[in-house]
Length: 358
Ligand code: NAI
Ligand code: MG
Image (cartoon, rainbow, N blue to C red; front, side, top):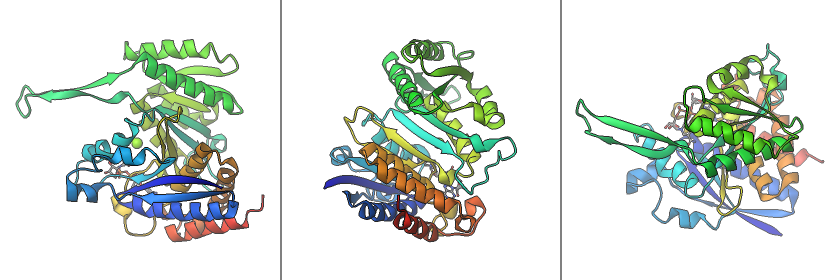
């Protein structure tokens, strides 16, 4: 029997609450399938670790993670540690060296959920946003000089490489081709950013030549926000830079009903390193410890992890269970306007897995 080794990194705040729910659900699912095992090892890295050790994860953390089949990640961020330390010290410290360059973010309106676009035809909202996850605006290049003086300067340099843009475009065209509508929108800002974004557009056109069966178009990122809200049914697969897709995917999550539902996968498609699966939300200090965090985004991320591991039947069963639970408004957490707890949603998803006979 296959035995997958999963590193779980709950991190901070509600990350701990949703990952423990996710691990419970995955154990129940693996038992239900009976064809594979999941062995979890938990790592207590994050802001509490930082307060004890002055670093977010141990020096040899990457070496520790390397042999795992996947990483299941909660969220990082604490009110009393600067966000750039928590983000760069843990999440990006894993994504970048493990070359998880394709960040994939599906968005759909799940059964039972009323998104804010219900009056514009949002039932047809079914997108996947592909975010370039290794360079662009978050390449980490830049610096500060003359700190604190009136002549202080800071640079934040955006990096686009031909290799980096080509591989994310190929990934996006492949993904678009695998979906029924075979429709890709390439997001850009090549009117104002006339170097990197113009190269991005050129590479999109070059790669498109290899995918004659995929229909594609280009959108400026600012106009894209309007198209997402006013004509959501005209979009399917979307590819954008690191910063642009970061912003667009929060918008997408809001349009799908709640940030608490949205999943993401940070993929190293060549599988040289483990890929990482996480809800897109953060550590949500405002609701930490109340037992009301919505675990659906974490469960949906688990379906992406199972697909990546090659366990498609289990992924589908988990998605059916999730949809059965969201369809019941009595099982909505407060972010969806309900009163259910993390515990109740988790129990209901486990019950739906056990009851699923497909
Ligand atoms: P956030 O995503 O933590 O919360 C935004 C709002 O959405 C809050 O009102 C929160 O209660 C709500 N929310 C988020 N997830 C929810 C869930 N599962 N169920 C119910 N409600 C949910 O973003 P915020 O407040 O901007 O950041 C808090 C901390 O998280 C910061 O330190 C930030 O840097 C960090 N962060 C970490 C991320 C990550 O680890 N991937 C992503 C985004 C933020
Ligand atoms: Mg974000």
